[in-house]
Length: 605
Image (cartoon, rainbow, N blue to C red; front, side, top):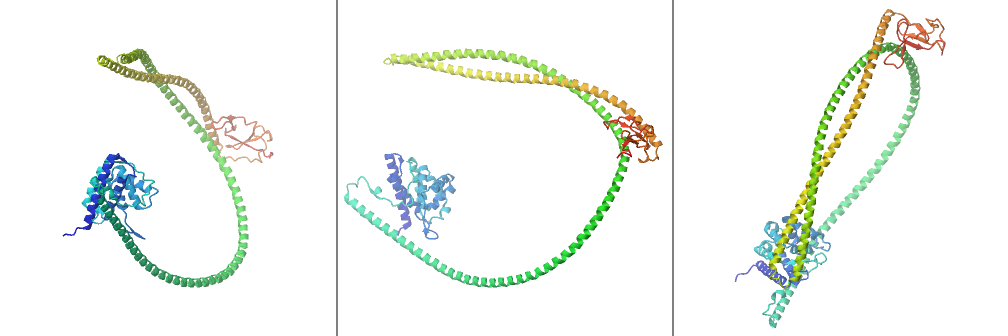
């Protein structure tokens, strides 16, 4: 006889168990009620069978201390393949009571069943066999056709509603043992005691074999762990010997470095003492040389101050002479500049007057246009008011019709109730009349709805008309404001005309005075040409006025002519000339008509 493959037998057994558990769960749920709790035995056995199916052919992963074999790895892979599974994976990781990967896998299976998406999640996992090969052997249930069959069977569980509490349940320490007694019972064999005894004996033998296999697995895992610990112990001993040799070498190097450090300290101390003596000697020589240099610097500084004082005096005298020369030229330039400025201001004022006239014409045209628009808008407002009155009248009529319709409806309802109370026994004969009343009631309701809609449309039209009226009132108010502004601008225009007329009169007066001053300036220029080459009289020599021949004093102050050099008293030099650049008139020489300069008397300090 051909020997069967043990892995194929395991897959067939697990497939049959999955079929029995899913079938029993669906049948019991339909008889018991479709909403199941976590304490329901067939549901617990279903999760145990699914756990065994997922563990079949799982690769053993080596960790630091022991060998790990869990189904959480492939289930955690589902969230990358199926984006909707991210919520389940996140909630499983956030559960506080779960500490082991197996507990997280059990919680994941329960949440997937409650979502009715366990078949979809496992189907996505089975399709990606290249990713499953990292977790399962090639002969595993999930890698073969039996896995696809189980996924198809899981679709039938969508008819069941599961209400499971995962948060407070201890999923880490649960023992996943399949209870075959739930699937071996049948209605025909209930009376057979011998068969039950045989089954019990078989189950005892099976439990004994499973326990023995479990102990053997633990012993083999302990042997492997001892071997790994011995290997790691030998490696640690070798590393300890290497570390001791390194420590001895480092101690020798430390001793050598300390001896070298002491020698360097001694050399640096000797060098510091020698340099300290040299620095003190150099400091004394520097102090002696510094005293001599300070004396030389003070002497040079004193000489520089004297020379700078002399130079300052010379510069002051030169500035006085230059300033007197520039004053004459500046006065001439100021007179010419004032004449040109007055002419420019006269031209500018005339241009402003023309602009103001143009603005007045524009404002007058705008006022006429705004008055025409005001008349049109007043007519529109009157029409709108008439229309609003008509709408109000129609609204009142509609309200009256609505009240009548409501009264008719109330009367119809009252009549309907009376007919029901009086003719309960005669329902067959009055059924036709009742249907007619209902039709009338429906017609009244439809009429009422139509009238309400009509009323709503009329209210909307009324609201729009009110808004247009408000807009027109705002525009009329703006037109009134524009009219007020136009009146203000007219008043400003009148004021500007008056100011312009006053300024023209003032400019005419200034022009006449400037023409006179220009003639006097020409006379002064001619006198200056005639008197060129004369020398100013010194203050000490000028003791008496040239005209009145009286001695200068506090009351009779000196006035010196810039051009001819003559000196007069303030009583004799009465000729004054107004200048635009100065607020007061200036005194002019009687002989050459040049500007006089007031000077202190020689006998007055």
